Amino acid sequence: MQKKRRERWRQVITACTLSVLVAGSIAIASQADAGGPAVEIKGLRFQPDKITVQVGSTVTWTNKDRAPHTVTSRNEVFSSGKLGRGDSYFFTFTEPGTYDYYCKFHPSMRGTVVVASARARRPTILLPLEIQVKAGDDVRWILPGKRKLDPAVFGTPDQPIGFEPNIGVPLQAREKNEAGTAYTTTLMPTPFSDKFARVTGSLSLTARDVSAMDGPDTEDEVDFTATFTNPKGVEYKVVVKKAIPRGPDHPFFGGVATNHLMHGMTGIGTRLMPTQFVYLAFWGLGDLFVKGKKVDTHRIVHVMLGEKVRDENYRLVFDKEVNHEATHLHLILPPVKGSPEGPVQSPVPTGFILPNGKQQPFLHIMFETVEKVETKPLK
Ligand SMILES: [Cu+2]
Image 1 (cartoon, helix red, strand yellow):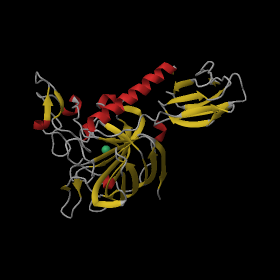
Image 2: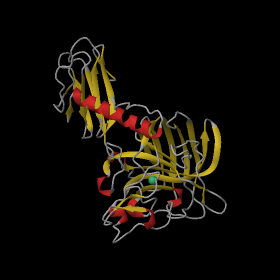
Image 3: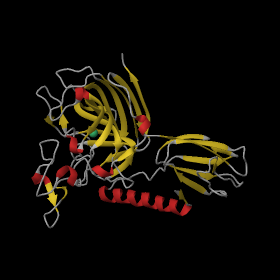
Image 4: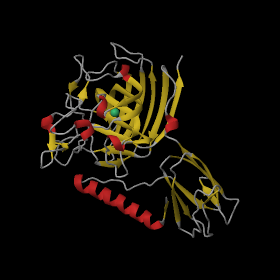
């Protein structure tokens, strides 16, 4: 669990390699790994002296003082040993709780790490309810790429499943292994790829889940704004004020859904995402702004706060690898638009040109840092 400095270098090198690969493959600049939560030891103080992190986070302490210090937990969970000037210490917190620590050489130096439990975020109240979410910091732009096909969701060439229109993958759109005994990936690039570029952004959402069922209208409400950049630093904004009362291919639960299994096996949303527990999701109609200018309206927007479906290499995992202890958020604008006749195919005018010279026709943005989830019952 404890990591030494050498391992940090490996992390930094991996992050650099990754951004080189991204830059190499699509010729764009990408930000290097910004790192996780960090505490500076400076002026005989831990700065900040109290931080809150999610389960699974690695906290870094770096001694910026001339004097040596230690990072020693009161209940002997971690202990850095002597840290000279410029030395760093890492610890990964796998259990929720409050961890007080101090410096053995200067016992008046004290700090606290609060490790929040992802499970504690699960809303436990019934409809009607209101949820507020804020996210930002670690934001990633998903680039198009082929998606590996999970046999649990798509079966085998002998016994294929999961091929219904719009949510599934048609059999002719699947690649097989050489022996023809298993599916490998989709034939074409999809928005559900492992390729990404780090960008910046923030998200704020208030959703009211009142209606549980689809119908001609809904009492569900959405007030959503996300701002983010593309890999070249161009600014985008997505604003949603209206929930879509019913779905064309699967229920939208009145527009806002709370506490549901979605994606994968479920038939709710694309099967290219793994089956996961979702705390909050909505489908709404939104406006898209690029560089402050409204470029489109009535876009179908889907946002979802769910279990973590990507591993440490940012690979979109299969059903059995979903991390039930962590959460993240995805924002998707599929190439579909709302019209009086219902949804119509329409590429998102992202203005982001891919290496093949074509415009990326969708937006899929991941918000890995969920800062706030607050739930309250409605009367
Ligand atoms: Cu989703």
